[in-house]
Image 1: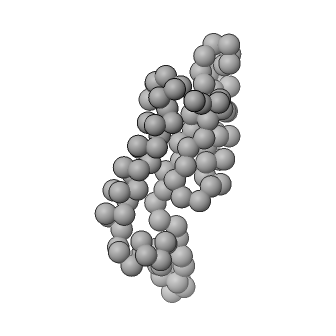
Image 2: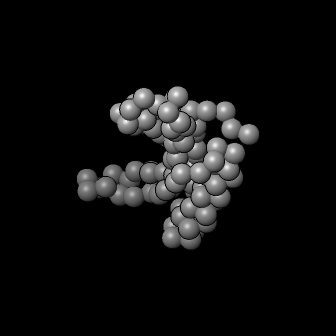
Length: 98
């Protein structure tokens, strides 16, 4: 998505909210209450897996911030890792937002 920085916080919050609604609708109610899936693996061992979540990385791509596409990709990769380190769905940015 390409948008003004001032609009991105609201856009990301709405995307994450809508994702959460859809994810809960397709998950079993007991799994949602527990906060994770409980699945028996192929070895017969019960394992817990997190519910679906969404991680969003926002990269300021103005020419004075990014010199080449590889730099933008590396920033996005690092930001996505930071978002995934948070519990549940999250978004992170490489700039200050209003």
